[in-house]
Picture 1: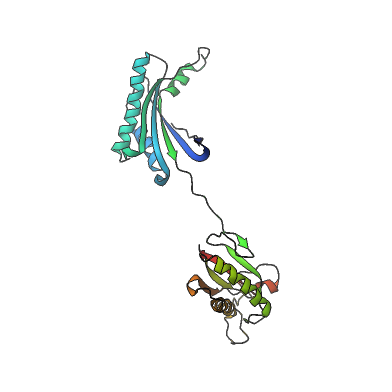
Picture 2: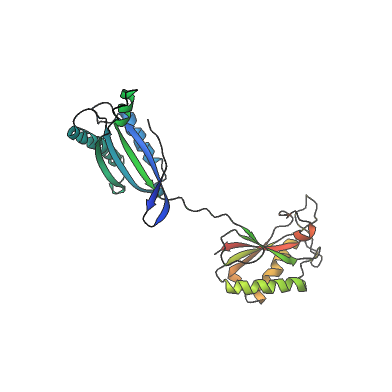
Length: 270
């Protein structure tokens, strides 16, 4: 039998979300040897836990309240040691086991008489306590309309004024003004690498890409991304920080055709 419980762990000066997971092994009266099933169960408990998160293992032995105190301390220690030995025998490094302690008997209040045998049976046990490191913080990419001081990989920067005429990949005066502002921020935050993604609107569902009226080739979204790429190079943004790619009509914004004739940035390295 086993039960799990998750407890907060206090570190001096601040709260740290360390996790404790407890597995209990129950023994027969006056016994400290493990059955084959118990041994397998408790070893599997350790081995099925993500090893990268295990900070330490503590083993605490207990007995019921029957018998002399000194004897019960020895018995509880033998129970804890039996678990330790099984771990080491199974290849679990002894370095991670920081505590092996027999705590002796668990007293029962005098006024408790109902289900006394059952209560005592639950006190004849060893608790194996896993101290786990916190799970890494998961950051979800966001959506912005300008370069920020801090970004993570996958962040999208929608450039509201970097829009194109239908069928064209030429940069307008308004678009260049917006890219000038963008270039200043990219010079400020030199750690950011990014992909320039071009998009189109208004093509049939079976035709993902549109024709560029100037080149007469069906690569309009790529040409739009490349136009921004070349302009940023002209503004002294290092080539090594940028890539460009056309996505055709596969990523519509749902705001109308005008907003799908766009280029946006996606952060690829910070």
